[in-house]
Image (cartoon, rainbow, N blue to C red):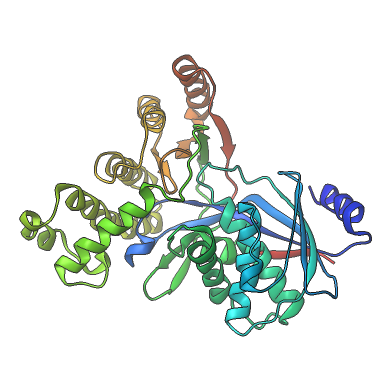
Length: 378
C-alpha cells in the first residue's frame, strides 16, 4: 500500500512527502459504554489508513483519495467546508486543531486504507487519527498531546460529520500498542495496557457485509435514551447508575429507555470482569461474557441485526469460546475468540451456512493487535 500511495502522490503533486498511518480498532468488550462514562477495552489492529502528506506553502488543502478515486480542495476557514463527506473528516481535523490554537497550513495529501468500510472497525477514526497525528508532527512540533489528538478526532465527528460518538475509537487509533489491549476509563481518561497474546486461541472477525451508516441513525437515539435515564436517576452518566436504582425508577421511564440503560449498566461491569478473567488467564470466562454482551446488544439495546445474530448462533453451535457483535451496530462484524482446534471448522461452517441463507459468504479478518498512529517514513 505504501508504494502505491507514494506513486499516486508523485503523480498528483510531484516529488514526495512524509508517510503516516493509523489503525482501525477492535473492542473486545465494552460497547456503547464510552459515551456513558464507562469502561471500554479496545486495541488497534493491523488494518490501517495510510497517507503521504507534504506542506504546499499555500492556504489550501488538496487531498486525493485512492480508494474513492476522488480529489478535494478546500481552504482552512469554517466557510470552506468541502461537499464530499469523506473530505469533511480531514477538514474537521484541520478546523479542530486551529480552534485549539494549533497550527495548520496548506498541504497536499494522498491516502488509502485497508480498514474495511462499514465493518465496525472504525475506519473514520483511523482516518482522523492519521491526519491529526501527521498535522501535529508537520506543523506543531508534536506539541499536541495524544489525548488531545483523540479529542480532536472525536470533535470532528461531532461538529463536521454528524455522529455524536464517544472517545473510544479515536483513543484506540492513537494509543494502540502492539500485543496489548487497553482498558480505558471514559470518564477519568485513565487507561491501562493489558498484554493480550492468548495462547491456544485466535481472534477473528466475521464481516456480515451488511453496511451501517451511523449518521442520522438509531445510534444517536440510543445515546438520547441513556441521557434521559441518567437525568431521571440524578446522575451525570449511567456510569454512576446501579441496577437497583434503575429498577426503582422503572415505572417513571419508557420500556425502551429502561432496557437501553439496563444494557449499559450491565456492560460496565462486564468490562471489569473480563479484565479480572484475563489476569487469571481464564479465557472461557472472557468468552461467556462476550456472549452475554451480544445477547444484551441484540435484545436490550437492539443494535444487532438478523445476520449478526445468525453468525453468533453458528459460533455457539461450533463451540466457539466467545462471540459478539462489535462496533456501533446495525451491521458490520462479529468478533470471535476461537480455540485453535475449533477454528477451521467454525470458519468453514460460518461461510457455508451464511452463504446458504443470505447468498454470500461473510468476510473473514484474522486480527493482529498492533500499534496505533505513527510515522511510517520520511
